[in-house]
Image (cartoon, rainbow, N blue to C red; front, side, top):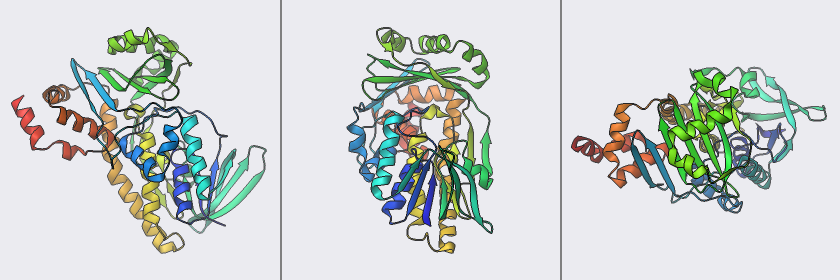
Length: 396
């Protein structure tokens, strides 16, 4: 019998398994895929995510993968341009955007090094129960062999379409319709920092990744998905040309080195993240539009949050239930602001009040850097709207 079974070994599940194993628990980590395997992703790590990699002793492994360090961020919209530095979290200001076929195996290897047992090519088909409590999993290997394993806690870290969430019938406590669709590709010969461009109905994100390749992402309204997908490459290039002409000019000297990737399945929800014998982390618990590039960072934060709440209480059913309840409460409180902020951006509108705010702070570098810090989670909205900001707006 295991203490914990974690279903899904990517950026939510592997850290959860690693942290649980480091806490001395016997952990089984199951993954449907075989690593390394790429995945649709915006790749970017906000400072709190980088700080956790540093805390976990994994940041040097990311740096060693020829992943371009990122120290600057810029944002252009409606004739206003902000450019600033990235404020630190626990001393970490430089960030990275590793490819998923690089990041995910590093995280899974760290779980194994901590003592977790890792099985790839395993698809969960059911849950074991003791009364109303989840007590383990049923799964099938790629060869078709079927197995059952028992555990005190089953953690669903298996993504937006989580099998664990479906089997426990975890309700969605917040849900909003899809708001955008996205298409992206990778370019060589395109030096970049973390760049954001916006106009009504379009959003462009640019970030350097591994081996000299730069990710360029375009966002369109969900209502245009069927039209855009008929000639996605043309729509992609046209969105860049009309939203970020200077970027388009730089790209004319660069080379697109991978096919175009895209999706219209930008679901937005927060599920109940725990119950008797089970918990959800990452996209299984909480999925939002990728436009804010918060998925990996939020997965790291939730993995740490769950293991911190459980502590040494895993073998005490009453204490475990209380810990999972606290995790659910704190997850909802902490991430609902990020969720709502992301949906505000995903509307792909450019409200005049936002433009006025950006114009007012554009000559104050301290406020510009703090504005970007609200996007990363280093600074809260309440901390941003202080007396200095209000005075700057009044003078503007």
